[in-house]
Length: 224
Image (cartoon, rainbow, N blue to C red; front, top):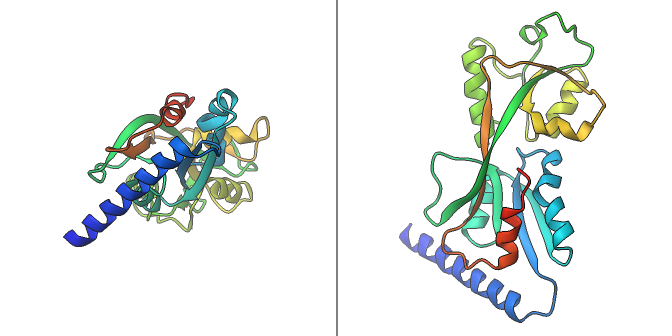
């Protein structure tokens, strides 16, 4: 196991040294490789990079949409410059949290349900997969509020969950920001969560990373 860790660290150091060399001597455009966990809905993306792209149109941003576990591994091994995912109780020793923000949730029901009825008690619950950190937290919350009811459907993204609820497959809880992409359209009906539920999203970087200025600017110019 020790040899494996040393090998991974060496690969990460070499990858970072090569990236610094390219950033210094390459005549091509500057790049940032960003990993975003699948539990982060598409509506968040403009807040991550819209303002930055207006100020730095010459920087190429490469997005990778993957699981939180894959993202943490790739940032740790220098395959990504930074990652955005649900905060963990602990992180690998070579990672730091450069920025974090709170992410509140709301309940959602199919649009045809009655506002006066507590339809969530009789509809199937659609959850994020429990192999993600956010899915694990949702499962704990749901067990506390509906101890006798298990999730009948699981999905790996909130965008898919919103569409499943809109089609009448059940109810769920999703980040409030995930619904922003729909604007004035009302694909689902919201309801208040009791008790409230939320998570913390974290932006992670390698601890020993020699960061170029355009990467620090990316983190500082996020809108959240």
